[in-house]
Image 1: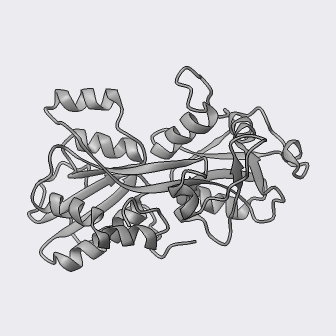
Image 2: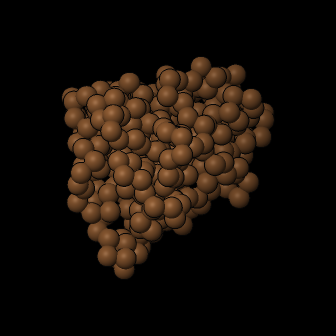
Length: 288
């Protein structure tokens, strides 16, 4: 399911473009998008199609994580923040102090894939087993019917919405009072691509990222809520039905009610054509 819009680092759609996160004045006719690394392929694909329909506009897309996107939105240095999590109360308070009222748009769904090297014999795990592995309570693959090899845990860094979602819904199982954290030995990597690259070359690794990144060099794990329920592979129909237990919405945020080109971009993302792009890059559309 490797998609053709794979992006490394910063994607630039026009030379000399102003980047989200700089202090340079915004160029007329430009849209700056910053945030979720999970969504960077999707927002790039939308941008490419949007500019075909609006040749007078150009769009810059950068990653950095959902938190980085919200910081840029609150700082007034981007037009749209892409996020794989909802904005927090603290971020809303910071925005309010700046006179900003972020507007949320749910634009797609994503199944969060847990991946291992294809040579790893383990192919299915429960949420409890995943919580044990990523928190450091389970440290050897033989404890989950694998080889006698120490587990190498890979995680996104703390600024990532994917990191936050995985911690809240897998390690903490949705319990707001839980204090579970990732293993202190977990390797915190800067992007989904970095996790994909490490899994490809190390049989002992386990990591997670949006299912759009699954490629032939990775094996996605089937996940069960507990020992009495079915193991479910991360695929589109099971994300839509919420049968796959690690699924989430994806969002775009604007610093207020969108207008002009920004509104046109949001409208395009939610249109039939925009939602077909969601499917093309291996995410799940919210509209048929």
